[in-house]
Each structure stands twice: as structure tokens, then as C-alpha cells.
Length: 510
Image 1 (tube, rainbow, N blue to C red):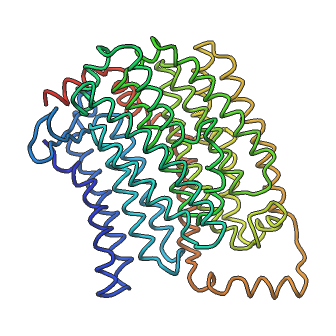
Image 2: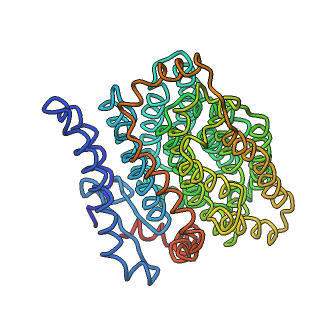
């Protein structure tokens, strides 16, 4: 057993609970304590990798921890294989960058923000590491409540409405997932994912279909896949930029991991094929991707546009994974990594650029590129990566997604990849051109601009935010040139998806 994987959950959880106490002692210590918490989390991951590097190279990496010493299927097990390790690493890196970005950005109620943020970090790690279905439900509900509170963090009418809509959809999704968990337990007497996987094929086909449909509906709502996509863009528009970076960059990827883990490890893709759900799911995901790009094309709000774009990309990722081929897994997981950094970086850049606008509307984006050209150039690089321009990381991931669709002779999927890139050229270039337009402010405009941003000028840490924007851009450029760096972790992750028997054996047998 390795207790470090337990501490990956406990460190952010403990940080969240200690922040109010630190505030009572000395509020100025809060930022130091927050950085200490996220650095300790990163240190734990680095030690896990370095201590098990040879096992990673040999392809037999697997860690687990039994809570309370109770062995499965009775007790709760935490497990880390190649798939969960990859998601833990990229999630932790993005969490680190967003924490640094958030310093000085939130301003009022910063302590409450960090409490919610670290609860999200703990729930994300828990979702990636648990080997128990009920605990997945607990962690996704924790994600729902905390992220809903962050969406409504501004406490205005629009933010409150978006938070309520978000909570309605996601609480419903959570209840459906809980219903699925109950039915699994009543039929199999266990919630350990490895034990459920062993017994699921023995259930009657009607019960299999019902359980699969319930879990599927729940996860599709969480991911914002058609027809459950309309809550997502409004949430992105209303939340502060660090929050939208978390929602699009991290939470959507956690739900993709849960989707893979439930439908390949627990239920089994052979069961999905036997129930004739795979083709239906593939078509729904591709149609969702198509709608996301179409809605983005007609959006006149930059943050909603990025939200619709996320729908397009998540749909494409879901579809290519559903091909159930090694090429599909490679392209899909590589694009998960790519999209996490591209979209989080874009929302981070937007947080800087939108301080110079009256609203998020297209017409008010005029001239923002002239206020800080270096940040806007970084913003453009991230947009070009989203389009799929070489030699950026978005090009590499999209190329492998396209090749996977062509290899599987899914020509509609290949069309969606090309369609998404071509439409992205149109809707992103509009904002690039608008950002470079010269703007002449009248005296009234100048007065309104100065009056509207006195707080930001004091609290907004320009150098920090600029640095994080450049960091995301450097990741996209650097890994775009050296995307082969991901070969080993991607192969490990793919092996974890395909070799379900090994996961079952290791979880149950230790």
C-alpha cells in the first residue's frame, strides 16, 4: 500500500479546512499557506513518479491504498494506474497554475474562494483515484456544490441565475448517478469497481441497459453533451476567469475520466456494444460537437464562445474515444491534455484582457490587443492551437484524432474535425481582428473607464497574470514541438483502458 495517494486527497482537503483558521490568525498568511498547499500536492506527485520511475518504464505501475485496512470488496480502495496517474499529473499542473493566477485577482472574499477551490482540488483527486462507485458519487456531488458556489461568486443577478441553472442540471445528474449506484448494489452486493466489473456481465440484459442508460445520462449532463449542453455557456460567461479556467480546463476532463472508467472498466465496452449503444453514443457526441461549433460561430460574447467551443471539443473527444481503438484512445487522450491547457490558458488570458472592456460582448472587444500586445499575442497563439495550427500542441492532437477517425472509416467524425477547425478560424479571427482595431475614446468614455476599474487597478496582479498566460502558451508551444514526450504516459493510459483484467486483478488481489 502507498499512503501518498491518500494524501493527494487529504492535502487539498486539509488546506481548505485550515484556510479559515489562518484567516483568523493573520489574513496576510493566507496566500503563503495556499501556495504551500498546492506545492505540497505537486511534491507528492513528483515523489510518486520518481519513486516508481522504473515501474513506469516497465509498464507495471500500480499503486493502491485500503482505507482503514479493509480489503476489497468490503472496504474502500484508492487505486492509481497509468490512466489515473496521467490525469492526476495534468490536473495538478493546471491547479498549480490557476492558484498562482488567482493570487490578488479575486479580491473581496478571497479566503472563501480558496476554500471552495481546494475542495474542488480534493474532489477532483478523489474522483481520479477512487476504485469505488459510491465514492465517485460523493466526489462528483462535492464538485457540483463547490463549483456551483464559485459560478455564483460575483453575487449579482446574472451570476446567481447561472449558478442556479448549473446546480439544477448537475444535481439532477448526481441523483441519476446515485440511482445507478443503488441499482448496482442491490443486484451485485458491492460497489467496488473491480468487483462490479466481474459481475456485471452476469446481469440480465434489461438491467444492464437500464444501469448503463442511467450512468450515461448522468455523465452526459456533466460533460455538457447534446441534448444537455445549454447550461454550460452561461455558467462560463458569469463566473470569474479563474473559475471558468477550472470548469473548462479541469472539471470537464475529470468527467471524461469518469466516463472512461465507468464504461470501459466497470460496465465494459463489450457490454455497451452488445446493447447497441456504442454507435448511438458516437453519433450523439459528433452531433454535439457540430452544434458546439455552430453556436460558437454565431456567438457575440467571448466567454460564451469559448464555452460553446468546449462543447465542440468535448464532443469530438468523446466520439474518438468511442471508436474503441488504440488510435482513438491515443488521439482522444492527447487532445484531452491539449484542450486542458489551451482552454485554461484562454480563460486566463481573457481574465486579463476583459479588464479593459465594459462587457464580454464582441463590440467591446475592440482595441484590447493594443493595451498589452504581448498578452494578446499569447492569446492569439492559444487560439491558433485551438484551431489546430502547426507546430502547436492543438495541431498534433487534432491530427491524431483525424487519423483515428479515418482509420476507423468514420468519415462523419473526420468531417467534424475539419469542420470544427474551419469554423474556429472564422469565429476566432473575428476577435483577433477586433482586438487590433484602433479605438478613439471620448472624454465620457475615459471617465467611465477610470471609474469602472479602480478596484482592479489595486488588486489585479498584472505581472502574475501575464506570467501564467505566458506559461500556458509556453506549454502549448513546447509540447507542440515535442509532443512525443507523451508517448510513454499515453501508452500506459491506453493499456490501463484496454487491459481491464489486470486492473480487476490488482484491485481485488493487491
